[in-house]
Image 1 (cartoon, rainbow, N blue to C red):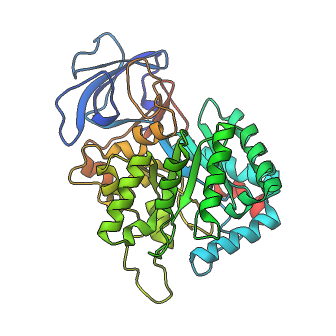
Image 2 (spheres, rainbow, N blue to C red; image 1 turned 120 degrees about the horizontal axis):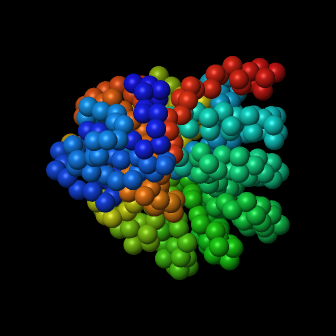
Length: 435
């Protein structure tokens, strides 16, 4: 399939399409493994209607999908666009978490000018767009003075890309700085000015409860939401997730709180894990798992085969009513040497790593409806009458076909038209990486 094969008309039908039912609104039909068959009528860049197969107006031009899947464009709710693609310039020789921290820190201090950050972020956006992503949340390293540089670049790109990818940004700040009124005040001001969220990476620190309460109060006072990196470790002694949930309940914070990773939760005894999950549900936290990056970093010890997958208790959290999603995380940097901001790859690998299969009925929600809801964009990640025809067309008809190949032949539609899916050439980054 090629984007050139779409009907050259403003009004047409995608006939005999297979849709993940969890992403479809305004239509119900017989479902098998969470998949329904329908005709999609596209008109003037929107999904005009979702109809039973064979009932679309015969006079309209039509592309017979032959049961191929049609998905809404995807949501990638936890990325690091500011770190992306520095691997060739600053590697992580042992693949460890500390090695990643040290090498990113060194590269940031030496190279992260506005031009450098912009070039790498734009490259990432071009890649994500070509793969079919419509909404991205990125964490931005906000160690002063980097926060001023990166948030300015982010705002420029948010404006430039507003018709292609919706962007959100989180200030990934050093939590120790929360108790420094001057430094923290400036980070909060910059974050608020650029419409961002407050974040950071939690770990056991002196005055940790005070730090969290100060962070929550600042977010409340400034009308900001919170998105934290939490317990990204195999050390079962570290369980700050419980304290975060308790702090949200104690402070009465009514903004949205998202927590990412939560790896050490899977290392806890069953009773403590259940108590923590119940608290997370009671506090209304949302959880995003980053399976590919977590498998790369966690339980990595030289000369020793890893014994666990590094991911959180995804099924147990979802069963408790917690909103759960998956995302890319890092891309070609010291925290993850691979990746291409491809939501299909993220979904495929998450199904395998987290056992989101058997059944697969609602699995598609983890890169579509649920992350869109968590990010406050329930208009994205859905196929519905009146909604934009921002769709991804696949030749795969069933789950086994979809999950067994990378779906490189997909068509990405935006506003009812196919886009040019050529990926940016890595050579485009040579001017900044090969200096």
